[in-house]
Length: 441
Ligand SMILES: *Cc1c(COP(=O)(O)O)cnc(C)c1O
Image (tube, rainbow, N blue to C red; front, side, top):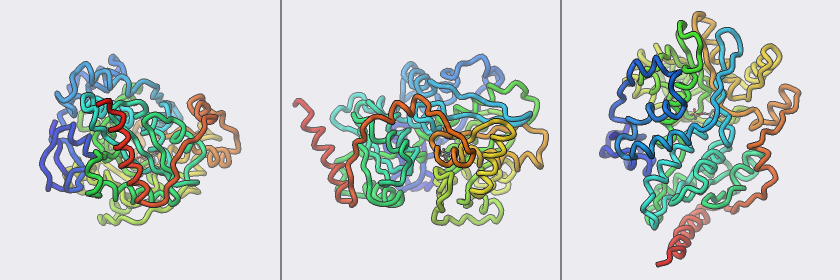
């Protein structure tokens, strides 16, 4: 499969190049040159395929012959090696739980797939390590660290703002060791992000092969299609039209869902549910796209002021505003509304949602008000334990700590404290030197 840049100023590239480079040289996001629908038989028979088989069928055309069939099947199987339960909340409302992976956030799927693809592409380039550089405000770091742990030929460097991620999130980043290095930055998430951006532009770092592992990378973005198929596969009644509500920040997840519908999955409508960071809801209402600085909320993985994947969504609807509005809605909710939804879900339905899932539930309810005859699915993107304090305080309960989390809580933290870009550069260059000294020649 070939990928082109959405800025149209760079040449088309292979899947491998798109994965290794992350972003095109013209700074545009990569986009697949074609999307070929899957056979209607496959879609109709979803129940007769395993998760691993579905993942392989869905991703195959986007990789093409760049990874041998047997290897891609293995990668697909390992990527989705946990549960994706669809939990019934009421007659026509379901929660798709995406938090049963190793770090209990949906980002596990994309991170695991990308890590294994990079590992394959680097299998023979032992001296040319790839360094994955990523800034995190919480969830991305843990999923990336876990997904890439032990992958040969790949070093991972994660920058996180000191004192500004939760205790659990910090443990998930700093206790793994091996090829994972955590840099604890004296500053904010924006400072971490700025340092990462500067490193990607820095000519004096040319000797280091850097790539990113956020949802701009096609290998992290596209596997998110899988769980839309897994959800539909679990529905008993397919007579009503299906609507997905996706709690959205950078809009990579919902954008993957739209690709799934282009592959023939019967999804009638998408609802993007956001917190107060309402750039996309405003755009749909006014026709004007105005990025703003992000505002802090209790659903902080969605505190994004300029969603990077929205340009891909526009491309999927042919850059046609009316087409977009026909199949896609977006609503924004306050923290107070989010807490209220968490309480309603718990008190009326006995369901504990995290703040992100609760925002997804709110968007779905709003859509269903005017579209009664639908089956609605909201994505529950993180386990409530990842937002422990907020959930326990709002619902007045204690959440038992799951095994995945308990396993890291007692491990010692290892991080390198930095405060300047020069220090980051030192780590990146030092890393490279170490590799060379490891080489027996
Ligand atoms: C990253 C994240 C989101 C937002 O996903 P996007 O693909 O950036 O829209 C939502 N919820 C949780 C828990 C997340 O970690």
